[in-house]
Amino acid sequence: MSTEIKFLILTKSARFHGNCVVGIDLDSKKLIRLVSDDEQIKKSISDENMICENGEIANPSDIVRIRIIKPVPVKYQPENVLLDCNYKWKKIRKANFNDVKPYISNDDYIFCNCREFLTESNINAAEKSIIIVKVKDINIYVKEKKYDNGEIKEKTKIDFTYNSKQYKNFSITDRNYFLKECNLNEALLVISIPSEPNSGFYNKFVAKVFLMKKN
Image (cartoon, rainbow, N blue to C red):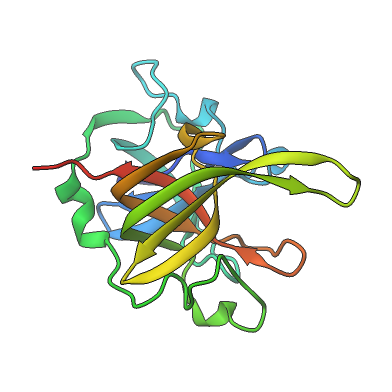
């Protein structure tokens, strides 16, 4: 039996032709990641899943009413919950900074270290796969990556400062910043790590960039 919750959407980032949807369960006051049973898009959430009763597609910063079926944690993603895809979402309102503020991390590091990835030797120490952090001195840029077959693709990267420590070469899955270059003074970042490695590395993805508004 599914349970109705009030959900603050933080991310709608690119993942296997679908969306990685992370947010805050405002009822349990926990960060969660929505997953589906659609194996064609690796259990991601489709745009169709996110259509609300009013016909609009829900986006980050929306607070919506949804239904979840049950927790479905996997080894390195304890926050995963199975979405009831038969339930039509209901928009409640737009979120503001005060809705998110209690969930901003004060951890010393972003997932245990300053690197842009974790390995099998240190991923267990992370104990979570979602984090919200306030960062500054942000540089978003485009970098070429050459693959073994000789193909070259442009990838969007981000460098920033968190807790007076430098973080470099993080990949961005926030579609709003694909192939864009800019500098920002401050922002909130939602950072996620995958359940499976890529070539032995669990990359830390910046799934959403929220600009910090001045008072």
